[in-house]
Image 1 (cartoon, rainbow, N blue to C red):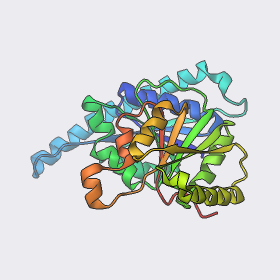
Image 2: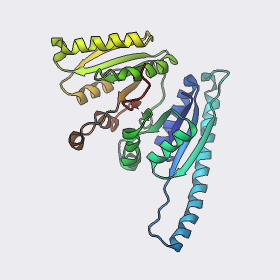
Image 3: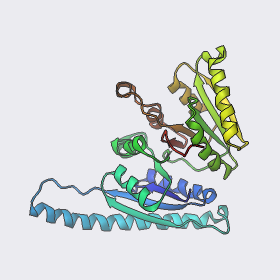
Image 4: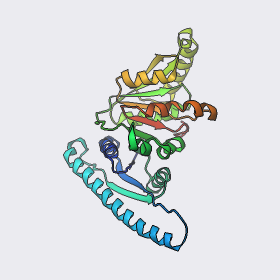
Length: 294
């Protein structure tokens, strides 16, 4: 993981996510790219409107560049304050990029252009920020992403990652993602706790057997020793996830975002989306097919 992309609208929530990304940059040895999507309104066609739009673009571009430069300066200043946490032979490069377009499109283009492999973005629970961070634009990033997205709650203060909870339905495709997580956790000497939520079927043996098969397959393919399994008994996955989030004593929650059937999603939404709206710890979301087969 060489570059971390941080989408920003220059809000306190976005700035806080950038600071979290800076802390991650040390163990991951990753550079940071601040990214802003500029929206230029054009209400009608015609020569007058085209000229107005070009003038407006110049003004927006200048203002955006100044704010991005200021964001870079703030992160570099914070880097000096926390220089002791970075290896002597590594200091992250902090740059910025901006394009005109929708947030989701700009992020995807920036990832391809700059070769970033992780998006770190702020998430807010209410008000106008929610429309940016958890509205259609940002949710489109997560739901269609081919890359991991780390959501940082507002005002969350970075703390060293000691325990990472990975929520799984024991789908064997998750083992590929856990391989990536093992490399991630190893850089911080963190424990990975694999959490499976199910009802009484576990006690009756059906889910217990499925869990044994999953863990046996995982142990064959992943050599990281600091992995534990935990079963959470709950008749409802959302309740189980909320319990894990609130009482699991973990520093980060990891989930795989799998699309539900259209009708089910229309009425209930995904587990990831529900949890993301009120998460109070960092939530790392992977696309279902992430990682090469191992």
